[in-house]
Image 1 (tube, rainbow, N blue to C red):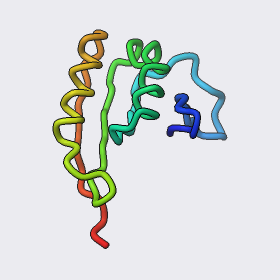
Image 2 (tube, helix red, strand yellow):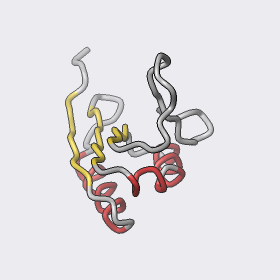
Image 3 (cartoon, rainbow, N blue to C red):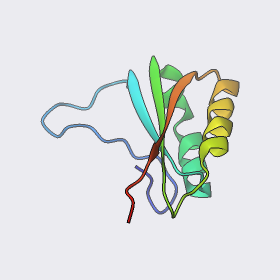
Amino acid sequence: MITKGGTPCLLVPSETPPPRSFDRIVLAWNGSGEAKRALDGALNFLQQASHVLLVAVESERAPNLRDNVAACAAHLARHGIHCEHRLVQGPVP
């Protein structure tokens, strides 16, 4: 989740104590500056994870994200983070 300040936000189930590390991370991506700042703020967590999934939702409000998702994955790779990435289609109005 990205806050309006562009900082990373970690979501964990309320019924379990927070983990000391995050092994599997899903990174939501929309190509915005806020998303990039949140990603950069979370690099330490991402580098420690064994699996990172980068997900972007393409819609009328965020069209043509394919190249942007590939660029984000390349940015992560430069930091030693290998991720799986998925581009999904948003709902049709």
